[in-house]
Length: 227
Figure 1 (cartoon, rainbow, N blue to C red):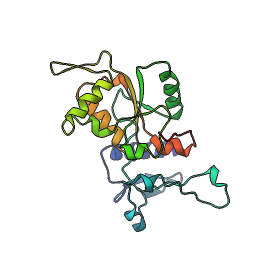
Figure 2 (tube, rainbow, N blue to C red; figure 1 turned 180 degrees about the vertical axis):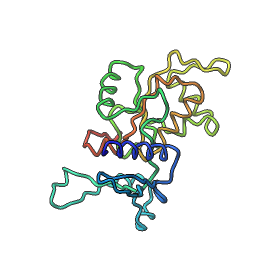
Figure 3 (cartoon, rainbow, N blue to C red; figure 1 turned 30 degrees about the vertical axis):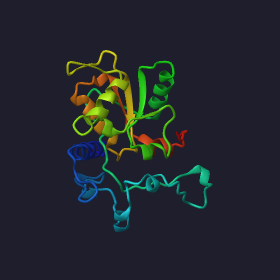
Figure 4 (tube, rainbow, N blue to C red; figure 1 turned 120 degrees about the horizontal axis):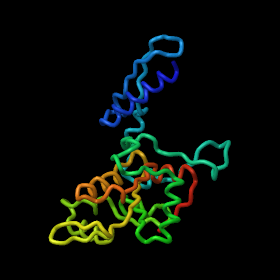
């Protein structure tokens, strides 16, 4: 019974959220039968208190302010995070593009030190990158992957990624394998970059995505650097 309820809930939640359901305001309503065979209803949503509406999610100083909480635990042992900004990303952004966790990211970094065809990309704007980033990452803003708005920067970026452009056609034979990330599961910048690369045919097997981004990385107290 418990497994059946859990499975039903996950399917409903996943389907609605992947379709862009409004978790911040309306939420997802689930009707289910509990372990006592009683019908229940629950709304799963992101709790968004009125005080949180004034949080400036576009400011790196707000998001990465280094605020510590709970006087009972040493400050070095925990962090607090803004929890109400952005929109939750699905676990998989596209079939064939691997979603990475922290251990996979570290393994990718280790391999990249010996393989120049592997590239870790921080897809945030420079002012975010400069507050701290994952070691070995290269800052290529998501805007530089926008062919329509920034055509010159787009072509320069492709050259950096090893993509050859011949007579307007893209040759991905020497293209690097990329692992992209941004602020966290609520941040769309790395997914925008990946989607724009896919539009020109960048091979899926050469695209990886670190969904957790800087939030997950710093939550686990992994090493960051200020470039």
